[in-house]
Structure formats: structure tokens, C-alpha cells
Length: 314
Image (cartoon, rainbow, N blue to C red; front, side):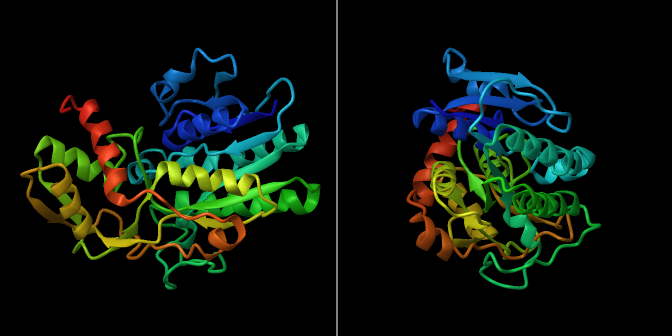
């Protein structure tokens, strides 16, 4: 029986990864300090003898008894709100936290999996973004704490591979959505869905022409699994290449929620907000045999249903 440690396993994606690994026969230990994660995301797993939870900040030294076959490092606040409210925690978890998680993987002779992000590309000058693109990041901007934190994590991960020979995997996550997202997340899906369900104005920042590509959470986790069970190291983009403007997306949310909310425009909150975001998933297709399967409409139906229950609107 294999065993995995998931830092940030109480978060949106971390909890879905718990479900996937347990379904694949892998025992799971979650290490999370619940700064942005929630025990509610894994309540359904607490009765399983194959699941355990340790409440700890991974920026501190990590100790896990027994054998460990995989260390999945997902811990990090990741929403635009967090960039201004938790900037130091973000930098620490992506530096000290990554170092500690890599140290655990090395000590246990385990495979190390880094959840990196499309934000390493910054406000891209290349479209769509390939893994070979080095990015256009403002290191001292508000978003820099996350962008540069993840860039550092990637560099440290590959340094450990080169110096210590540990088996590492790096995935670059593009915009992902689904049940268990935080309603106050500050990201576009919970923002738009929450506003539409409440009947509040749907807030589009800027002119609404900036684009994003949305991948449903189960598709993303399948990409994780295909990477970790492959011979590839990465970085490899995992995301949905179907691109939409923010205005188009707001209109789609309004339609699917049958909302009477008006769409209003406000100034961009952060000047470094990427104008375009679309993954080139050629490597994922050719090397992993992965591509997204869940349509935006189907994924949004599940997500809207989840948020409707949270808001008492179901």
C-alpha cells in the first residue's frame, strides 16, 4: 500500500487530490494549517482509516512517521485577495515550505510533486503559453509574491533533482474551478457565481476583454495523476485551452444561474493582472495522453449547485 503526504490538502484542489489518491489505493496524510483551507473539504474522509490530518504550517519543519512514497506540495494561498492580505505567508510557504517538503521527500526517498502555476508566465507576451516561455513577471508588484514564489519553488525543486537525484514532477496549473472553492476567494468563478446567485451586480474589472481558460477540477486532478505516474518531470501545463473573455464568461454565468444581475465594470484592482491566459497543452497530450473532458457548461452546473447550497439558494 502506497502512502502520500499532501501539503495544502484541506484546500480546494488538495481535497480533490485526496479523493483521487484514496480511490487509487494510496493512503493520504494531509498537512495543512487551515489558513485558507477548510476541514469541511475532507469531512467525508475522516472515518477512513487510510486518511489522517495534521494541523501544521509547512513553513515549519515537517516530520511524518513511517514510509512515504509521494509528497504533493500544494500548500499556498492562491487568490488575488491573499496577495494583499497574506503576502508574507505566500512567500514563506513557497520558499521555506517548498524546502521543507523537498526535505521530507528526500528523507523518505519519495517522489516530489510541485503544484506550480500559470502565474509563472506573468502577463504573457507569448500566446498561448508554452512551457518554454520564461514569462513576463513584475517581481515587486502586488502579484509578485505569488508569481515569484512559484518561480522560486520550481527552481528549488529542480535544484534538488540535480543535486540529490530525487524524482520530481512539476505541473503548471491554469485557471481551475469547481466545488469546494472559497466563496470569498476573489477569483472570477466564485465572484461571478456568488454575485449572480445573490442578485448582486456582476463585477467585471477593466474592459472585460482580458481572457482566461477554465479547467474543471476533476480534469486537472486527472492530469496530476497522469504526470505523477509517468516518467516525465515537467514543467507541464495542465489546463483547458478554450479561451473566453471575462465579459463572455459573466454573460454565461448569468445565463446558467437565471440571474437578473446586471453586469457592471470597475477599474482593475491590480495593474499586473494578466491580459491573456491560455495554455498550450501539446506536451500534456503527447507525453501524458491527457486533455480536458468536462465541458464548461457541465462543470459550471456542478459549481453553481455547490455555491447555491452554500448560500442557501438551492
